[in-house]
Length: 112
Picture 1 (cartoon, rainbow, N blue to C red):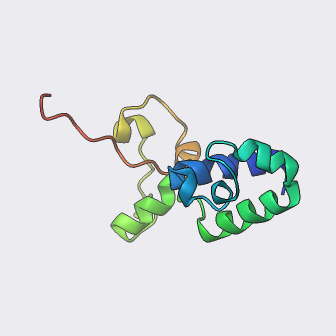
Picture 2: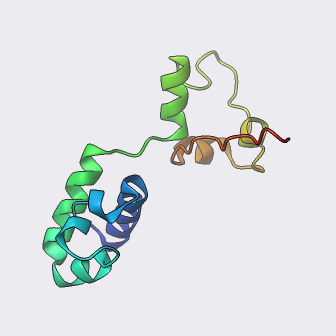
Picture 3: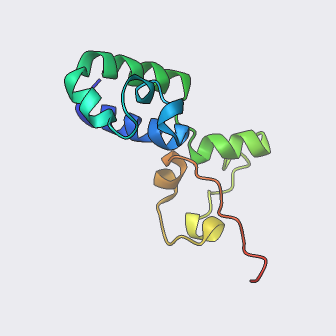
């Protein structure tokens, strides 16, 4: 695993677990010190992160669309709308948006 990929997947693993006690690296040392553990035990840390990444693949926007609607986006011959029309997040090229990791929409405030 390349260093950049390791860092990206470790960050994703941290966000997924939320607490060090839930993490396979976190339970091997003091909470919040996983960077030290990774430096001192790079081979074991890489193995742990690689296995986690295989068990928890990235879900893209295209994957989520397919899961919710049962078809791939644009499967009816219609072009994929700009991401700005879907999420109001500015203009992102369609293919780039489809390949991004899916993030659930933020909850709306009842006061709005």
